[in-house]
Length: 354
Ligand code: GLY
Image (tube, rainbow, N blue to C red):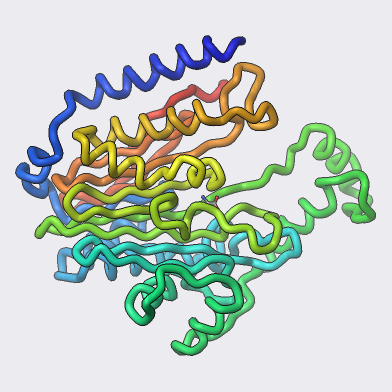
């Protein structure tokens, strides 16, 4: 399969998505249509409880930033979600390192922390960076010291479950080191090595919200790429990549392979396309297509030239329209609008093989 064939396929898919999403409208027209069904919160699929919480807090009058942070705090504290906060999968040394960024639409202010250890709620620390410093991002040891100065308590974030998953990766990812799985798992190990069955994962939670006054905020929080090189920072804490808000336009965020989102300024690109009149669906799909088109490294492409990884972009417009799009099919987003929370399908560029 040639790159031309891929380009044609991806072009057709994104054209279909744009056609389905309707005609372009100038940003001014979007701003005049009002906030349909607000309060509205959207999130990655692991955020059903998040959007419920955020919408309910906004109904009670909470600020949009407080609402999205309270929403993702539920998942940060949930040890069964291995992509965020407590129970997140660790770096290659077995240490959990978290990334988060927040942005408040009305003030256009932001805060972020990256590679922070031992703090369950990096999103709360990111908000303190916004509120209590003149900085936009604090990382590593400095972020931990900053959090402790504000009274955060340290906690080991590596749950037993996550440690076992990490240990299985460590014992199986290479046949050229001295780490071996238990004898009874020898067949499993051979198969894992042969097929590359133990994959890195990029799970994350993003949440954007809109209140009845038309104000927007967003947060993204994650344990990042599993088994990463210590200190690796993904897209989630990078304002403009993993999350971005323009209170006159909308809010956007991402989950999935952060390196690809960073290289394409994902969330910022979505907002800029919406500013030029694209709908959330059009903007998300255009950025997904751009990410796919910009992926040149054969190591990251399948035999048909399609990215082997996935990325999802999420967008919520000031008028209440929302959407998500991903490289691969079967993606969902969580939504709360009109007082009901549900999962909806994300648009996609490529259908996953059956
Ligand atoms: N999108 C999460 C990460 O790459 O760290």
